[in-house]
Structures are given as structure tokens and as C-alpha cells.
Length: 221
Image 1: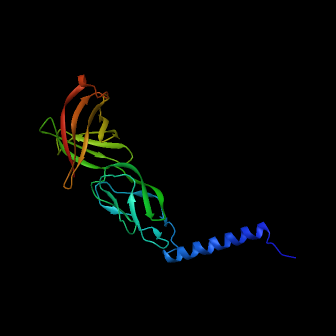
Image 2 (image 1 turned 180 degrees about the horizontal axis):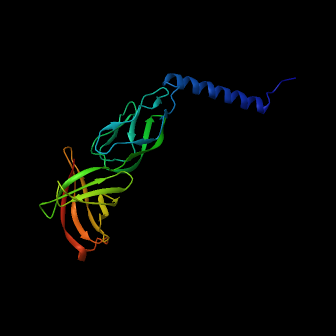
């Protein structure tokens, strides 16, 4: 009696031959490569305003083929080491909270790690209002502020609150012994050598053109 292999046996043999063939091809083309794996000790980083800094390098395994690390979004003053995955920032990193993706990739795929860099604005600024009269304020990271004006040696003192809207600082404050508030607003500008906040000050707290009192110019000390 002639024996005929069952259909299931033939399918099994075909699959086995296909698998062996794929393995041989994989061996010839440098097989064993997989997409990279990466782990940061934390994905939330705290920067000091107008100071350069960096993260620690993550645990990075290229899994057979080295690729590169990049950022999903361009942010001024922020970069990532393309080999180690270490985040680095310069003093030009803008104030505020920055959410960005770290993209680690090779020919087999990529891993995306969302990270957050918080760079709270804080610092003492000093200058003048209306071109010549002493004016200074100290911005705290919690959104409060203290203020001095009119004389550096015997100033009028005040306190208030501030907020950052885009690149603009808006502050509302009251001088000690007074009840009516004043306010100012102006953009923050950062260069490699200085940080300035300059703009307009107002009677009241509405920032309305009709309440504009004059101008101010200050620089981070």
C-alpha cells in the first residue's frame, strides 16, 4: 500500500523550511537587531532660570544596531546628546514648562519618551521707570514679588503677584501703606549676556491704555 503524507504534515514541513530559510537570510544580513530600549531615571527635570544644566544619561540599549537620539520638538536652548540621550540646556532656555519627546531610533524602529523640563522664572531685576527713576522688583518662583521704587537708598516698598503669559510678564502690586494697586507688563528677553524685562507701567490693575503711566526698563542682577 502506498503511503501519502497528510495535508497537515505537508503544511508543517513547508512552514519549517520557510522558517529555516528566513533564519539563514537573517544570519546573512546581520540578524538579531531589534529597536532600542531606553529608560530615564525620571522624566521630570527642574532647571534653574538662566543657568546651564543637564540630565543624567538614561539607560540605553541599542539592541544590536546603534542609531541616534533626537528631540521631537525644537526648543531654544534645549538639546539632546545624539549618542547617550543626555538632555542638555543652556541659559537661553525660556522660562516656563516645556514638554518634549525624546526619540530614540535605529533601522528596526523607535522609542518615544515624553519628558518635561520645568524652568521657573525667578530673580531680582533692577532698572528705572520713566527713563531715570529707580525701579526694582524680585520675582519669586511661586508667583509672588516684592518691589522697590523711587530711591535706591530709601525706597518706596511694595508687594504683589505676577504671571508669565507667553513671553510677557504681567504684575500687579501695591505699595506699603497704599490701597490702590499699580501694575506693569512687558516681554522678557534673554541673550547670552543679559536678561531684561521692559515695557509699560499702569495706574490700577487693568493694563488698559487709558491707565498707562509710563515706561520701565530692568535687567536681571
